[in-house]
Length: 80
Image (cartoon, rainbow, N blue to C red; front, side, top):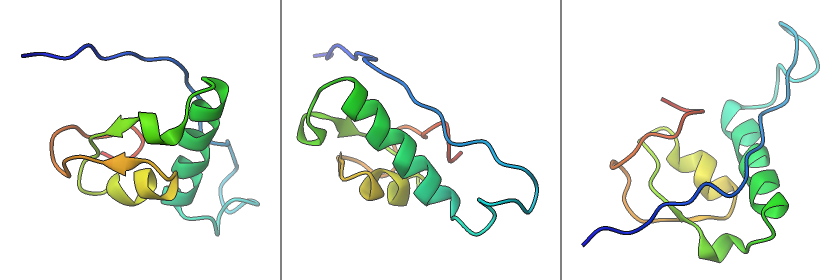
C-alpha cells in the first residue's frame, strides 16, 4: 500500500558570508529553523509531519520538533 506525499510549504536556510554572522551557528540549527518556518507557514502542527531523515539529517529534524519514523529511508536535502 502506498501513501500520498504532499509538499505543503518550503523555507530556505539563511544566507551568510564566509566567516560572517552565522559562522558559529551549526548547520543542523540553521536547518531546524528552516523546517520550523516551513511547518509554521503551512499552518500545520509538527505532530502531523512524518520525517524520514538520513543519518546526518536526524538532528536537524529533531531540532525542529518533528517525529522521525526511520533513520535511513530518505536523505533530507539540507544534510546529505
